[in-house]
Amino acid sequence: MYKKQKLKGKVIAITGAARGIGLATAEALIQQGAQVSIGDIDLELAQREAQRIGAQAFYVDVRDRNSFSQFIHNTIQYYGSLYSLINNAGIMPMGAFLDEEPALADAQIDINFRGVIYGMQLALPELLKNGVGHIVNIASLAGRFALPGSAVYSGTKFAVVGLTEAVAGEYRNSKIQFTAIMPSKVLTELTTGTDQASKTIPSVTPQQVAHAVVSALLKPQLFIAVPDYLQSVHRAYGLLPQWAQRGARRMLGDDGILTKLDHQAHSGYANRINELAK
Ligand code: NAD
Image (cartoon, rainbow, N blue to C red; front, top):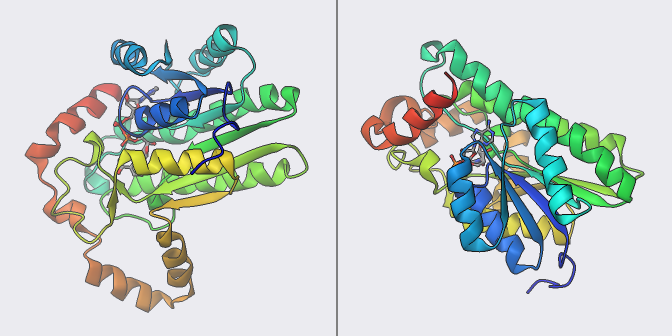
């Protein structure tokens, strides 16, 4: 299916890879022969998973530029020249805009957006020095279709999509590639309790997102939606007049997070990210 040799021996760093999409991506890349370093704020879990899958774990808090710099440095010290950084760490609070604690809004801006800026600014000089490389940012379809009930999150993901495209434009004459991956709902802890809230949203597994990341690294594309047909849906949606867009979204019940989230089932995830925002 894939050209197995292309990623063999390549050094790839992934943030937020102790679990979920990042971990599935690490596993998929190791199967391709890559040397993978997984960074996470949850070092204990990252170390356990790294040992299981044959990666190397390091601590990183992507909100802290020095910590991110140390993560890149540790990866290069351990494995050698960096080929790719996958900016995956992110949090997604769910609830009404006016009810969101300021600290949680700040944490999203810091982790989902500022962290991606830091990662790109720290990794890009390394890739330019090597004359080759690829930065992959895990954005979201919520960075294309704004999502009521996760307003600040949507804002950060729109920002990541724009950032990726603009930096790709600046480096279009280099050998460095850029990709924003835009998954729909992914079945990780982040989406627990959303079965009723997002009934009309297609869901995919973390392994499907990992497959998209591997595809991007093998055959570079600026944007990849997961599932991929949603890229065309987005294009068609963009051609509709605003009243028709509003009507379609109302029909699909795009405010399900506000009205149908199962708060009890979602509490484990909510508690984890609330702790991060303290
Ligand atoms: P997850 O919660 O399962 O995993 C995220 C990981 O990031 C966790 O291990 C967490 O410890 C780590 N992390 C959080 N803050 C950090 C920080 N400051 N520094 C370093 N690591 C940190 O989430 P997931 O579902 O795997 O999501 C991964 C990415 O995919 C996120 O950017 C998310 O926005 C995006 N995404 C998820 C979905 C979905 O439905 N799950 C859909 C589209 C996009």
